[in-house]
Amino acid sequence: MAYDEMLDMKISAIVEKWNMVRKKMFGGTCHLLDGKMVCGVYKDSLILRIGTEAAATALSSGKARVFDITGKVMKGWITIAGGELGISEIEAWIGTAKRFVEGLK
Image (cartoon, rainbow, N blue to C red; front, side):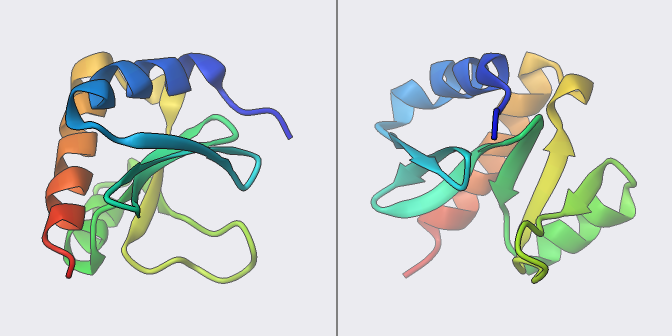
């Protein structure tokens, strides 16, 4: 399955300063910090690991959707259509995800 390579390039440019590792996963890409998934691209969408509280807020905004590729919702994860996001929005969302993942034990 193809994924939005341009969106992945934008994400890569943002996260390169944070020493994240890029991996191909679930037909797209993911960026990991200390072995923990932070964000990535699935099809044409930005996926983000932001935690359950932030996810609930994002979902109520109407812009985000739950991240569900297997029929089971991944709690604390959201997806946002990449075409709807400017670079500053992408950077802000990834910053939120990075802060959440840094707080994980």
